[in-house]
Image (tube, rainbow, N blue to C red; front, top):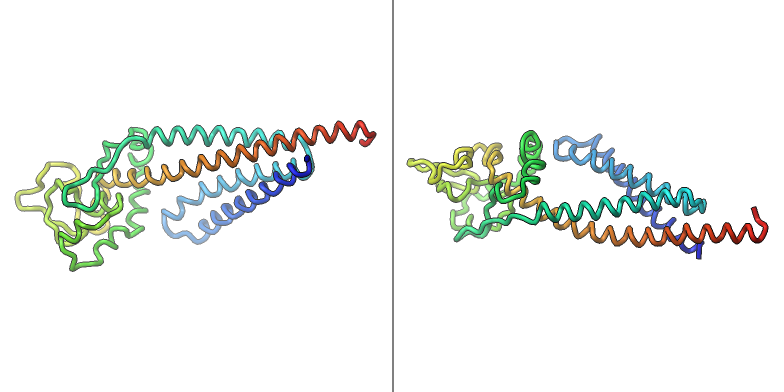
Length: 272
């Protein structure tokens, strides 16, 4: 039984070590080849995740292959802390993303988003202050808005039937309540009477293709709406990961217990 549990732990840690090396290699590749801020922003998280996973995997491999309970106990402790951290993060992420929803606008195939609809934590830690400058740069580099303006012959009615992503809805056009006149997807003119509503987003809007509504509250709201969807997908992955870690933890406990029994049996038989 000890051999079986140790073999399972060994196989699982070989797989996780390979994944860790892939993450570290990807981070190194981004460090050498990345040319945009968006790509560079992935380097540190990938590297940290890869290094941590590699260290845990190596400790698990030493404990299972060498049948060393000291390393197995260390491995199980790290695994237990990882399970606790994942559960805590899952609960926290659910709570901070449990608010908000896009507003349906009559006659439009897409929703519009407001920054104030999201939790204060998401606003303060994800899009406020200097943090937004890097995000803004990534959004401009992604050319999401540029793709909307490729069809210059599109009519206003056709535009409003589109299913825009939250970021496109919030960043690539002025909010509908501004009452701007449609020229194309990313070019709108202010009526002679001025914006229909004296809102800061209506004043912030610019037809400059690198400005548009990237500094609008609606853009930040669209970004958080997109992030909320991604976080909810991540929550599902976290739950699955917790289940997998708990299975691995159980197998590791079996391996540790069986190692102790084998050593007692070896001493009883007179082996060193």
